Amino acid sequence: MGLLEEITKSKKELPESVLTLSQEEMEMRVKEIKKKLGTKLFIPGHHYQKDEVIQFADTVGDSLQLAQVSARNTEAEYIVFCGVHFMAETADILTKENQHVILPDMRAGCSMADMADIYQTEKAWRKLGELFGDTIIPLTYVNSTAAIKAFVGENGGATVTSSNAHKMVKWALGEKERILFLPDQHLGRNTAADLGIPLSEMGIWDPIKNELQFEGELEKVKVILWKGHCSVHENFTVKNIEQVRKNYPEMNIIVHPECTREVVEKSDLNGSTKYIIETISNAPSGSSWAIGTEMNLVQRIIAQHKDKHIISLNPYMCPCLTMNRIDLPHLLWSLENIVNNNFQNVIKVDRQVAENAVHALDRMLIRV
Image (cartoon, rainbow, N blue to C red; front, side, top):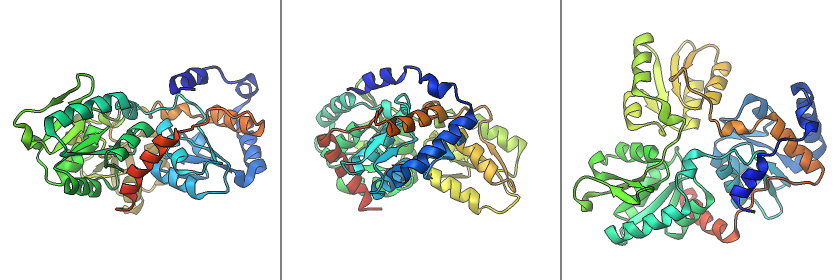
């Protein structure tokens, strides 16, 4: 069954046996099933998930970290991944054949990952080859589909995370003269700029127009940025920063590098989700922070650090809508299906795709 068919299927209403339960009843049932399945069940939860789901997670973290922990947990037969589709794909790629990765709601996708599909990427690669010959190495953010990871692995490239992007871009530029950075232009731009590459040496690949957007001589291009972005992080603006500076002059501003270059430049600090969490945790009591990242996580950080003044950089920011597809009813439904041997929403990556994707992941992991 294709992804579109699976998503269409997942849109059917949940059964009355789930929908008629109160939240307390659903929580009690999840606890019962977790106890019954024991070590056969493993529930990884991404930082951006709702608290109603995170409370049942066996581990909480970023996407690659969760996939790696899932792979190490060889006792688990059922991995109910509370995140989005590309994360569950990575978990399936890294886990063993006898382990089943399940996504509670197939509508839980990622707009950024969807901005680079394999057909667009292959067309772009052919066109870029005509322009630059064999001088480009592809890199992809782990926030990408298995097919894109496989493409990158097959063409000598590697994956990157927001934590190791600087190291991986430096490695890539030691391998080839240029890089193609997929699918988030902002992480690519911020990383390259931090490494001293001027914006004048960065072009943008528009997958809709199938063209390179660059002013100047082509031989000066060092970084080709895929025209994709995170719909959450792109909504933090310079105006948000100016308002915080006006209202709270002493407040520190920390943002994720998926934000625009202008926002990152005007912030005090920027870094991965892990970096943000650790920075706030290690900050002195009484310090003030405005955080530019997903709202579920910001609210959780606020609740965990009541000794500090913490706000969202954008007070009108909504949680990640696709992450929020995973809710308590869908989690319970998934667990009930496991108990009844009626598996739904099993994520299975094609073997050849998985093998090539592993090449991209391995090239990163041996260097970090």
